[in-house]
Picture 1: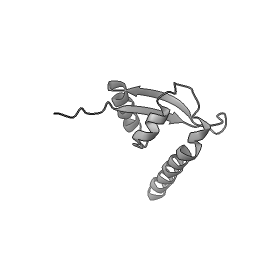
Picture 2: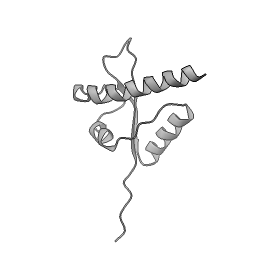
Picture 3: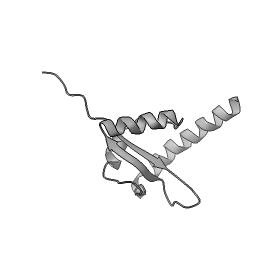
Picture 4: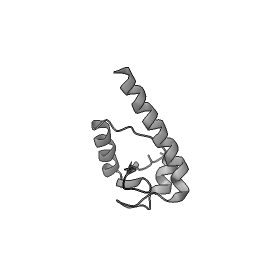
Length: 93
C-alpha cells in the first residue's frame, strides 16, 4: 500500500514591535497556496523554519490574527534564531 504524501501547509508571521503585541499571521495556506507562500518567502530572502507541529498549532489562525499567548515562547525562540542569523550574515558583509 502506497503512503500518501502529507499536504504541505505554511503560515507566515510578521512582528512589528512598534504596533503589535505579538507576531501576527500575514499568510496561511495548504497545498499549492503553501508552496507559493514558501516560494515567495525564499525569493524575498525571508528565513523559513519548517516545523509541522507548530504549523498544526497555528492552522486555525487567519490572516491578521495574532499568535496565541501559548505559542509566544516557541515563536520567540524561532524569531531569536532568525535575528541572530540575520546579524551573522550582516557581519560577514
